[in-house]
Image 1 (cartoon, one colour):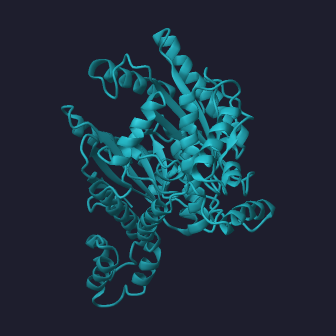
Image 2 (cartoon, helix red, strand yellow):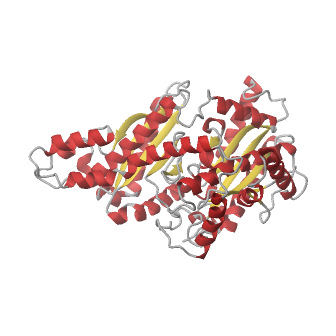
Image 3 (cartoon, helix red, strand yellow):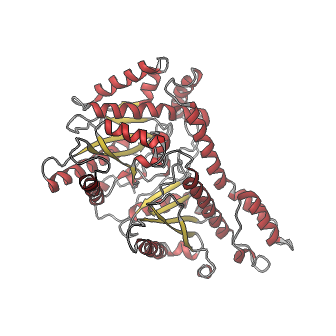
Length: 511
């Protein structure tokens, strides 16, 4: 049931029915989009595209996703060896050679008396693949977006020059937007505060609290800049839509209706600003920005606000249109054209800093438009969902790939039920329909500077695991949902710490 009135119905507890993954046939919309991208492809890359960065991002995407995509073929091979006398040894050797980790021995040892629990082995492999990619992310900074990177420092300087001291972005928790920061917008991940929510409907009270913390740090420590500096907190909502199959592959939380998605996102933004102004009197304001993302091409459209943050839903500037319009221009002329079009698209005179910021986002997005058509023969072949696991809790700074993770940011399962239910419905189509389990990674970040924070994060993991087991008890009993518990000190660059799993020997007999 589409939640068209979700923004007005705060007591609704169940998530909407999610679409199953569909490799849609070539229809009129798909042909039109593909023709548009193909015409550009024949002309070569856009002069503002960064082909070197595109190559690096593609190599990273392939390296990470291959770990997950080889799991099923590998387990299919192992299933044929189950009754070999040296099965355990051979299975471990093959898995270690293929993936670099071992399978849980307490499952393999039972192969001679009962069929192997392939569901459990599948979940184990997904969890280990996530751990490997997560560890590598924090250890080697493959996206060059950590706080110490030159890219992050340069972007923060640019952001300040535009008149903003902090960028807070809420994309939809749909896995097709998981790459919206590092890929679609090409922003260093450490230079932005990202919290994903179903339908991009962020929690207003929590966001107000984060605003308070930000302003307090500026007042007390001059971090990121002194409080008397004339900069503002920029809150962004990114909703999504499908140009290929708009009636079915848009945002599930809004019934695949992009106008409803945009309206709901704008209402959250306005309610957030009103909350700040009502609570902290005059001068306490924020800037707002609404962005739409086409999940088939990764092209964005930006609803340019006026200087008083007035945003008009039916007026935007299209990156894809500007891509086509500026494709043959030199770089400086292309940038000037983008700037002028952005300025003209506002309902009334916009702030120059906002125009400059949006201009950069659109120019960055040109690289992603080229990325999709060059490496994925755009539009994307997986128009629908193709996530590999659900991420639950607070954290996941390391996940920046499209259709890798469905996010459900929450403190408690009760308050995050709508987001989590959407993820379960999505994976009912992706995994359970194939008799595979739903892998759920639970993560709680904590501050190592706070006494007892690690222990509380550990308690949070177990509390959420127990709540998930109760809410989806039938799936757990059937071995169709497994959990993997991790915590991480956000004040360090170290990888996350594994603190438990439903696949641990002491827990497996529940299934």
